[in-house]
Image (cartoon, rainbow over all chains, first blue to last red; front, side, top):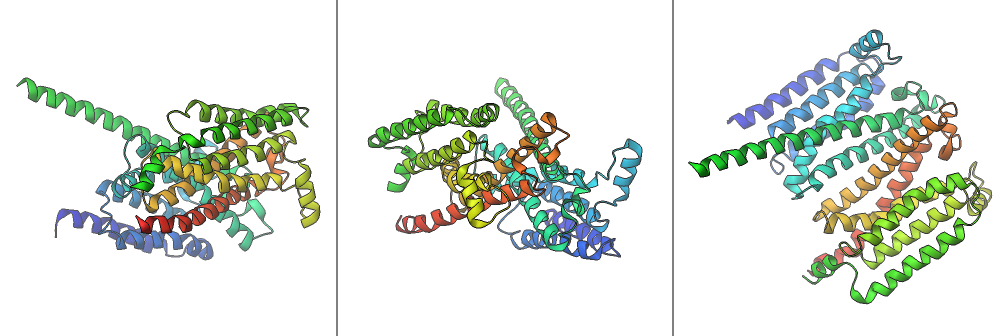
Length: 212
Length: 213
């Protein structure tokens, strides 16, 4: 068994451990179940397609980091995550901002795996490589908000927008989408900078090699 | 190879007069609807993007020409938008007629145009993705739908920012929402279903072509 497999299995075990731990006495069992279905399906999909879709360790680690954040959030129905409560008290934000942070992480952490996915399996090249992940993050965020509104209307129609995620903010959906957009933009900018630096480095190296 | 060559070239030389005709059609309708709109300021705001889009299409025509179906779909959408802008969307007569006929609580014309946005513009977007970005195969369908959804989401974010700046006290009552708290989600869903419908249709139509190559 090579290093590659060990790292993948290690990340998977970490996720399973966090999931099992966070499955103990969630604040709202119904919400916990609803919000855990998608990530579980996603992880199964990743395992099944593992052979055909060789994502890098960086991608797997980023996905694991995002799922860890989400799993923690779901345990506390997002509105009651201790870190968010603490931030609210220290920075006087007026609400628990943990869900906004996870929306941001959705863009920031998952834009790179998407970039890799498009580059490897759709053989996309050039500037579009940086554009498509941003577009996908925004598209999926929009889809998420649509589904969230359906669930809210199906489960608690009388509560309207005050149900769950929004915590009473009428612009919550737009702010969440914007957060994910900024996250993905930041990630792609960092990627561009890193690649530009690396390109400059390898150009210098080849220049040095030529002059020798 | 035949399919490839045609898709690479976009508009065939014979079609050029037709494309010019489409542009003139839009120009005529646009001028007609620019006369005495219900709210001049709103009309101006709504037309900024539309006119910019047409300018970009004209300026990039030589470098990137869409196919004739794509241009026709873009025209259809722009005409709907021009009508909506003339009547500030919430007062489009056809929308009132729909409201009375279907016993709706609001003028649904803007929802209809959101749906048309997905239905009509996902095909041109698909062309851009295929020819400009070189996306191939099943990814095209997915990315085109995702693109429509992303632009709809982006539009709602911009709308929210404008509303918060222009009239923070009105909140979501301002502009498009007409008092519906789920307005943003419904608008995005409308565009999403429109895009889904067109892409499904395109996949059925293109299947024979793919099989024959």
